[in-house]
Length: 232
Image (tube, rainbow, N blue to C red; front, side):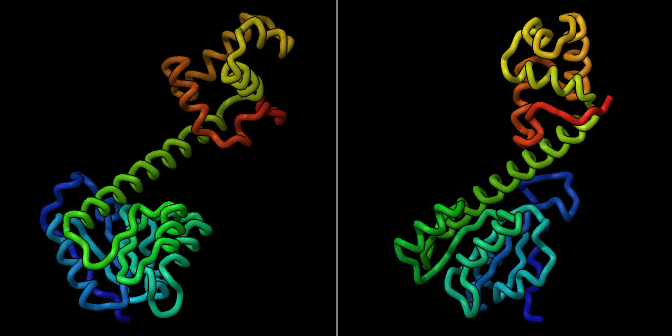
């Protein structure tokens, strides 16, 4: 095993009150040992942790994808390329923010990487601050993505507690229909619509109509269609 040691800072200025698994990890994948060492020292100076790998295969064998953070990735390495890894992570549901750092970049390669969602595509040698800015952006992107995923999971769990009628009423609300229109659509009274709407919004932890719409938009399209399975 040639995985470099974990570089850990004693000071953590970015985030506080977090467990080790929650603290951002900057993963460096480069086949040049001197580059890995220099990058590790730079990341350490910013108060962040890094873990280094000399190849893509070595990185994939390690169980570190669930840690928040970002990747600093060389493009051309023996075996699979950095662009191959970017594609693999997206295909397997691990769209990790990537900062590409290479001495062999070209315009088509840059365009391909950026279209696939790379944070930046930098050419060696690079200014320390430019690289750190890209890393911080990558960590912020990952944090936002994780918050979004967590919110969607929570909203899905709440949605599963709704009855069929409550889901149907919320579908009408989200479609912009009035209570009396929803009542006509469902063949129930307007008072009953108001009752189901109130109960549903309470279960979904929506404090207002605007809040509900924001919650509704986090649900997958398949969940936002008119429900047919009864949960009464």
